[in-house]
Length: 166
Image 1 (cartoon, rainbow, N blue to C red):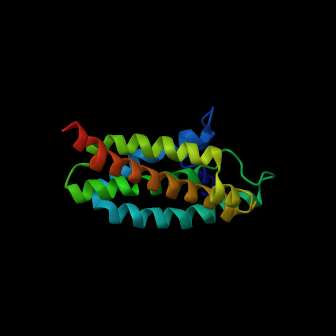
Image 2: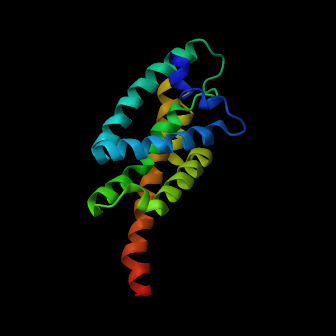
């Protein structure tokens, strides 16, 4: 059970780049959660999966030699969901289907992968912890940074670029 959760239904075994596969696997669940209960269900599910993922990671790492095995991608799922929370909120506020905000999906995905791979500032600090919390927390920070950057890009588009284009 812990391995199924940690690998997000074995998505973490896909090669190459299991973290990218895990991030991609998270996307349909964002659509489903948002469609069923809006931003609030997505936020609640993110918190629940964070707790469940932390439990799974602790169990998997107890039987593993690596501090952060590449097949563990539940942390990418949580990070990706966090990155898409602003897009979900924007869709809810606009009364639009979440898929209508497709530029936000692309930005959130690309920015999350960038921050997760690059590991700037708090992302890298969390990654260096070398414990289950660090495994999860680096992706949480990457998701927060990606969500904030996605929100900034949306503001730039809506407040500056679109008015200039008329």
